[in-house]
Length: 188
Image (cartoon, rainbow, N blue to C red):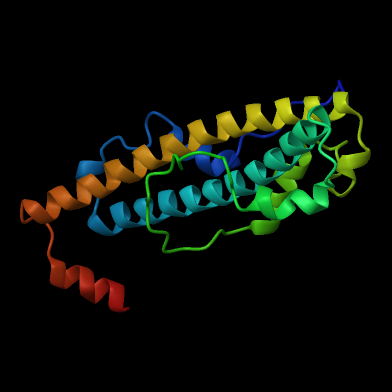
């Protein structure tokens, strides 16, 4: 891997940076309902995008780690033979997500894939079995570090989503908002 490469743009880029800015939620209780709903949808889209990116990244990390394990254990099976096991998430442990129902799709799947591929530009996953151990170990470290940072940003976006949903719920609970108006807005 190239030692002179710069750090990649954080997962989600400027869109997530804006959501995570300390002042993003300032004055949300005074904003119009439509604006709060728009902000919530914006946060929801960012969370979906980060979740999708994380799944891509985790898949690559699982493949690299399993190849290193295969080599260390002198497993005679090929990486291709192990793919169904790897992709089935065997042995990965419990999910750490919050079980949120996704109502939107990733905005830019190609952009997410490019971002993940850019984390290890010298590691071609179609050639993992031919790569030296040192390259795979470096790729595993880079992918794991990026996954940790991405997960932290995703948790922050989820907190923003929760705060916005909480504000909407507060308004309905206190009679500041009208369900009929919401349904009329949603029907447009």
